[in-house]
Amino acid sequence: MGSVFRRFCCCCCVADDGDDDEKQPLVPPDPLEYFNQEVQKRRDEETNLWSEPGDRSHSERPDDRVLYSLLQARNKTRMGSTGYRRLSVDIEAMRDTRREVRDKWKIILENLGFIAEADSLLGVSAGASLDGMRNAPAARELLHTLHTETSLFYSREPPPERYLLILDRLLYLDVAEDFLAKAKRFYPPKEDSDEEAPGLAINLPLLLARVEALNGRATEDDEESERDD
Image (tube, rainbow, N blue to C red; front, side, top):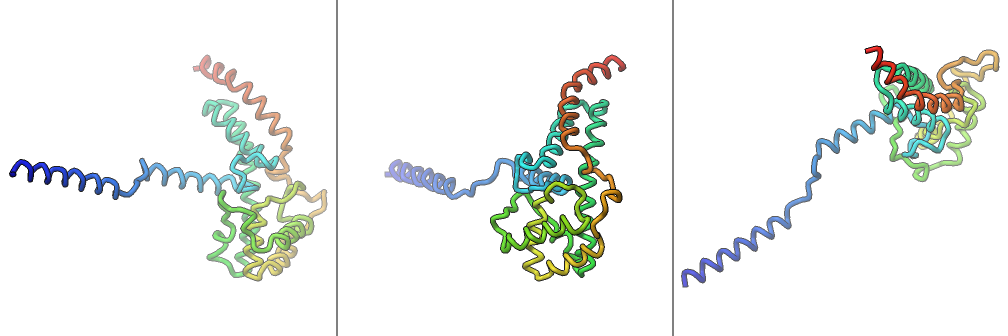
């Protein structure tokens, strides 16, 4: 009788252990690594200010494609080489221009009273979608007006679509027209002779050609550096 009782208890214990295992929550293999990846992704988005943030391939717009190609080319180039330094100059020139455009928007927003909220209003993540916009037609019309009737943007190419999402927020807050009026006053259109020559007056086809050339020369640079060493 005692042996039967012991077998019964053992079976119960095994069954109970199995139930406990099934009830255990699923835990990611490495939560810290996932968190670090997300932080890095957000940092990259803020650094590069992709013109089309929802395009994860960064290949739909010519300027995004150029910047992405430059970054990829630099990743494959030996740090400290001539090619690496040249690529870094071009990358920072494009990033600086994007930051300058964003800074203009921030100045206007702060002038409208959004001093604490400006950065949040200008934040656009890769998960943002134009499909979720509340008033896409009005936002697109406003963006076209800002592009043609102000000097908020440097490039003659279509303005970055990330700003459609920002304008949609301003429309929701009922301050889009005020923003447009300030933009016309602070940044009136410039004559061709008065155009500044910041980063994105960069010749995009020329940059792409340079990326290809540097990719071809990366090995040569490394070999030359090794001989110098």
